[in-house]
Image (tube, rainbow, N blue to C red):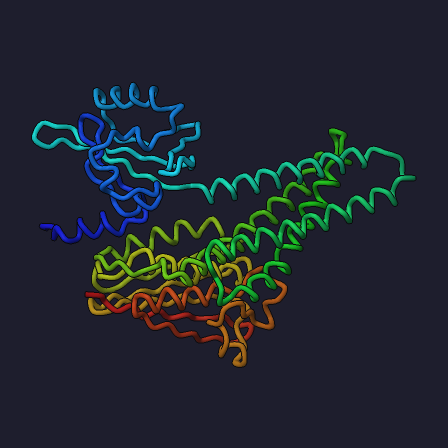
Length: 410
């Protein structure tokens, strides 16, 4: 298929990464708007100049040698493995960057493309997280040392523990605020902070208490007790990761970063791939059975359909008991793909059905099961992007069936 040149121009002009094209002499040929913003130059000030104009003075001489070596042995690669890279703006201010290199030959002349990303904000966040991690490690060390002292110091240990918990809660609030600002989730900010404060506190407290108790079990024959607390820590960390995945998915949707990209894909291959991945989440004895009928392929967004089914199967496994069977039925009629996911779980009341696709909503009979209340809301948002219809049938203690009708996209 021949690509319209206007698409390539738009890709160059509207790319969020800086793109700089240099010739075989190392002189700048083209600079896209993103690169101009990063280095605070106009294109006319850079074109025809050596690429070293964007390299800090202390690195320029070495960069000339490195550039010449690259031209003799070009290869597509990411620069700066294991070390920090810096660029210099027009005002002389140095900025941390990530750079990827590519190349092509035209009329026997080598041209090099540099893709540049300003990672100043990321470095700030990484620095803050490293500082917080060191502080948490220091607190953990202090608690282990305190646990070896006399019982007479229980009151003192309790006071230090309270201070440590207070610091953890303050760090939690700071991280939540940073995440809100980064993804600009202004519409759900208050709900996110409220839920995060509640949901994060329990697993964090579990990690802290288990870490403190592990230090008490120093004998070989106490290994089973240590493993018990290690398992609790792993479960809590996994829960925290699931919470963050839900928040990140919702953040991308709120920012409009998720768009449908229709393409033909094989229905059976997709379902088999998803079911194989979800087996890792199954409880003892749980099975996933599938029936696939109709045409082999359909045109839609494969990734969005996959995300929808992963969320639905995850809920089906989570809310169904051990030894239960989860059924996935798919019928592809060329114009539309109908998928039904049926579980044997706790079911949903008629009252709660009205709110199941609302963000942060959880059924009254699911409050003792871990979750954010975002899963079905995210599923509904994904379905809207591909013009899919989603419906739900359920009875308390009998299970739930969710039907997704995915139309073929042009």
